[in-house]
Length: 314
Image (cartoon, rainbow, N blue to C red; front, side):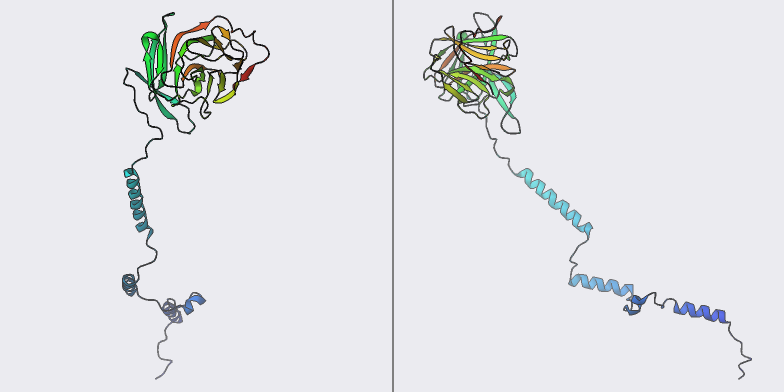
């Protein structure tokens, strides 16, 4: 057979056909030359299903983790809500069934979270001036108020504090009282109105959270700290007329005391900007009778006091 008479295929088509055959199998780089042969997708899915039944994957899908985490969080929150809360640090009990006016205030405490106090309040009408004054004390204190005699009695062996609810920030004011004192632990003074948290039972010599200035027996206490035994001062005795003064006209502001009309030789300076008078009970059946609470027109005369016999409130 003569090759010259046989038709020749065009070279261009032969080259194109060669490219179409060799292109899918042609390696793109050196790594593909050593790669194993590919497995069909149908066999891959069957292999994965068989492998999953024998050996579960160590890391589940994130879409499966999130619902489980949410469910665990909700379960923990429900358990926290069902857990009973601990009892309060200080429980307030009503021990006195007398008619009362309940007043809720927020006092400043040692903790960061403020704590509510429930106070018991009474109004007294002073016979000499016919002016009403209000006194307050901690509701848990066992205190009796004899309104006709303007007398307050402690019916417990625990110490107690009475606050006269007249806030003083200017002028000259005087609180005059008489006491029935059994054990010489009654006291009179003032408290910082900005820190008027009534402690109960009250102990004059405890300094924690104590902003009081107190004259007890013949001693002065500032924030629970005893200054000295003032032998030159008179003691607080039953039946004596006792007057406590706060003088905001004097610079610096002062607290002083007079017993039977005689000014005592020791006083306190730099008292707080706003104060309230207080009465202290130290023993059972101690009494305080409030005679007057009035504003004076002149400064307290401290000229009879020799030298600088004073203590600074700090």
